[in-house]
Length: 166
Image 1 (cartoon, rainbow, N blue to C red):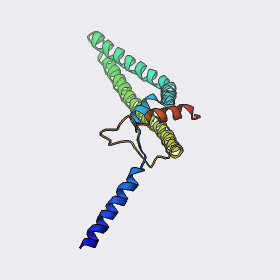
Image 2 (spheres, helix red, strand yellow):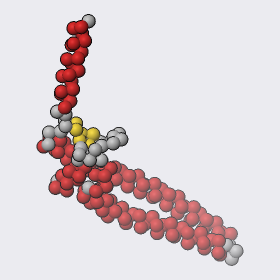
Image 3 (cartoon, rainbow, N blue to C red):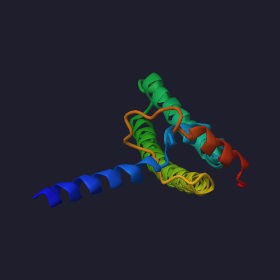
Image 4 (cartoon, one colour):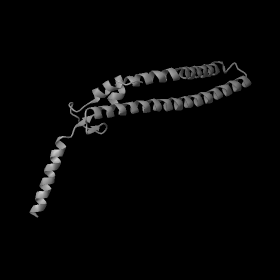
């Protein structure tokens, strides 16, 4: 029994000694994503790519709104066939606009997710490079309730990202 207790205390002591040399760090990924220069470039690329389609959708909506206003304003002086034709035109344009809006949303989300994936891979590369260069044993990101400023390497990751090529 005494041998078991001595063995247990010995293992406990060895374990505590090995944890003393452990180097741990923390990275605030949302802060890195917010301030990464690649994030701003990705945002500009998305705006440049989708701005014309967005303007086209807004113009479609204005056209539909104008047609609806015309229908309500001039309905009393229009013939039944004119009213019916205008109502059909409005309905068709609304259907087309809804379809175009849905396609736009799907395309935008796919492109945004692609850009976000590229940026996340860059961040992982930067974190791994820092971990190897500075001999970290463990780097944590999500799910951390508290991290001392001494182990927070978020600024270092942001600096590393700014030096990485696009």
